[in-house]
Image 1 (spheres, rainbow, N blue to C red):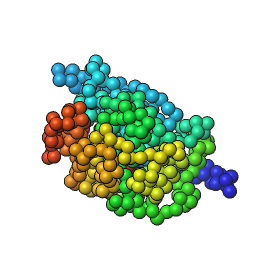
Image 2 (image 1 turned 45 degrees about the horizontal axis):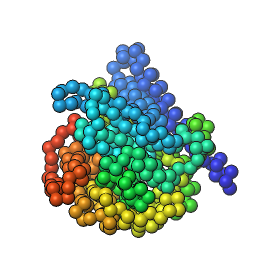
Image 3 (image 1 turned 90 degrees about the vertical axis):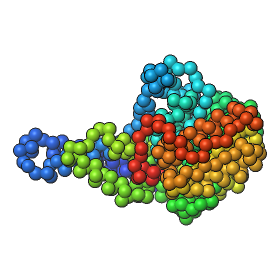
Image 4 (image 1 turned 60 degrees about the horizontal axis):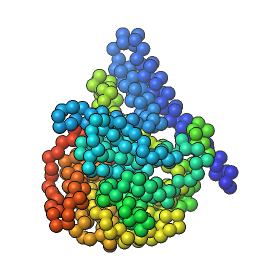
Length: 447
């Protein structure tokens, strides 16, 4: 049975890569054929449409196997000078690195932020706009997770226990003045890592923990994601979703949940919206109105770039976070050691949710506050952003104008004596970090 399953996985994984490669080749061929100079003598719009289709198709399928660059713009100082941003690994591990965005010729800032990026099919560069918006005011670090297909089998397993231990090590390395911001999927594991530090090494706990749109209690509000997790059995999930990396990559033989399969799920959730976006882009290219850096390319260059997750991480996340609800019921353990969320006492906790979030619906993330029984109520806060979808609460207009200022205020409060803490701003804050607004369909990204 094992041999058969492994053979099926290799064929399936390589078949998906073959389909992707074929579509990229067809796009390149159509672009080259329709752009042949002699066809300019024939006044038929078919050739322009064919060339446009080819350019869009070739680019789209090529992006699926490319890790995007961070492309962080320089930070402008108060004196008007541009400061280049260098991306430097601080801790390097087989499955993920801790990276620092060092701003050249600028002394380290007091606000130290660790952005915990989701491992859910996209690269950490999904948080590019979040990083860009925080850099003028914070010293920013990010968890940069690696694509499982590029990690040799000899490096061993990586499940949610290992993920949580990575977070513990990263936070301990950065020190107790760290403010952790966990976006979506890692929110429950960041909470567990903080609790583990509270028991094992209290002096290494972060100063604050901000959880954004995470499934702390998936059953608090039903979504398509939670419904799928409850409907399918683990055996079905293993058989239908898990495949073996083919011979093309360094991780050949590793069992993974393929990024291309995840991307198919993402697109299927909003198929009409994506189809319209690509049709509009093709016609824009045919009319000569497309550009390399337009909104479509900027969005889909990131959206289509997907990474594989190790099978054990994907399956353990579904089983322990969504099905068994170990975090929600405070029954989580790391490598056999029980984790008591009530041990968190010296960490301020904030939750952020979007009213229109269809991935982690309102109620799922705020459940963390009730679980942190050891944290005084005065050091807990929550924010529900009206009209915001999943993507908007950490990278869209809602983040830029409303949520980011509230998060910075919350971080600043934690360095003040209890009697001197000021009330946080609750209304919209007109702050412009230079990040362009996202279109309506951007908020539908599943993280």
